[in-house]
Image (cartoon, rainbow, N blue to C red):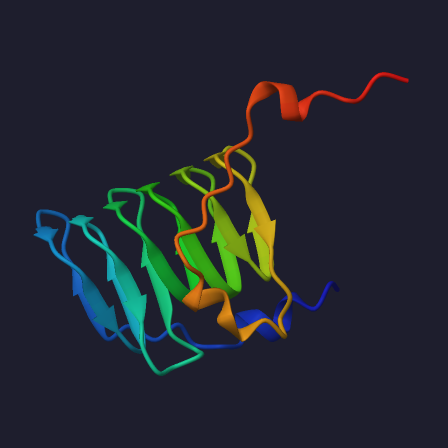
Length: 146
């Protein structure tokens, strides 16, 4: 009905699994599919493949900057997320940081403590963004007087 069949027909490729009782400290570079059920402290980056996908399960947690084309989140992330294609926030997703995305799917119950920043599909540099953090204080969120 709403073009969902197009996305669902793609097979979710799984090349690497980080198990539930695994804890990793350090940066990860991958291509293809990566599923995290454990915890990672470090940056995660997809290399060379625009179809690469990261899946973070309900038990999984990440602390660091994530730069991937496609991501499905159902766990907790502390850090900024840069996705040049698709972000899916499942009902138990919790993000403390900004989310840069082209397409966003958000289930009821997911939480983002940061900004949702839309990025054009033509902007291929989304995964190469500098560590640009936009801080908004309370005064900047108020409407100007009429």
